[in-house]
Image (cartoon, rainbow, N blue to C red; front, side, top):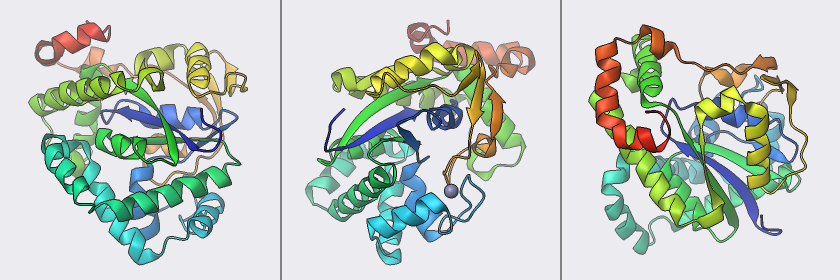
Amino acid sequence: MSENAVNVLFVAGVERSGTTILHNTLSQVDGLLGAGEIQQVFRHGYVQDRECGCGLAFRQCEVWSRVIQRAGIGREAAKDAATYAGLFANRYIPSSRLRGAAYSENRFSSLDDRLTRLYRALRDVADGGTIVDSSKQLLYAMTLERLPALDVRVLHLTRDPRGVQFSILGRKNMGHRHYQRHNAIRVAFVWNTINSSIERWGGSLGDRYMRLTYEDFVSSPGPVLKTVAEFAGIPDSELPLVDANTIRMSPVHIVTGSHHRTETGTVSLRLDDKWRREMPSWWACAIKGMCLPLMRRYGYA
Ligand SMILES: [Zn+2]
């Protein structure tokens, strides 16, 4: 990775693919600073002052208060940045051509400046270490990749679409507002479109792109973490493993992510494959039918 640039390890993928647990585990590796879904930091942190993974409010958090001070981004500027950063969600990919036009009009140049300041401040607080960003969103990753101050490596995390679907259903049944409009067809469409788009873009990044499955990660974290550390340019880092499947987890300073964000102590990584036992077989077959070519490619069928 580059000496002067801000080195960023970006975790890309579809939601409910295990990005938060991967991010939190990577955050325990020497030389990596996990900052969560940085795309949401302007909204959830600067504007809403949500609780950080360490238990303190964003502005009170020891790490983020130092970042805020160094970045020098005011509340109004952060509000503005939150609006623009929100436009890089995966759901806007079909209209990304329009976004390309918007770039040429320079409408997003102020966001570029604020992102550069934010990532530089994170790098300084991390003593020059690599920042792990679990924002997931492809358009946002593409935005970061073209910022001259950043050297971005993309770690593409995939999960069996039946597991993704089942996890989303669980959130939907819990009344999570964000998932109320999801259904099997929509999930299959998103899974196919986003994963193939990330992979296509990743092809243009050469050795700055790596694909990883959630299933491989939780089944054998040691070898996977070693490979990812090499990919991130820190091959000799000490890994946070207690035994083959147990991680030493310290608090992670993130303001957005799944419920895994607050787990600390020793955490066992276990494959969540409840869908195999609890999902009606006709449903699993329907998803497989809709996702088969890419499932074969990723080793899920
Ligand atoms: Zn914190």
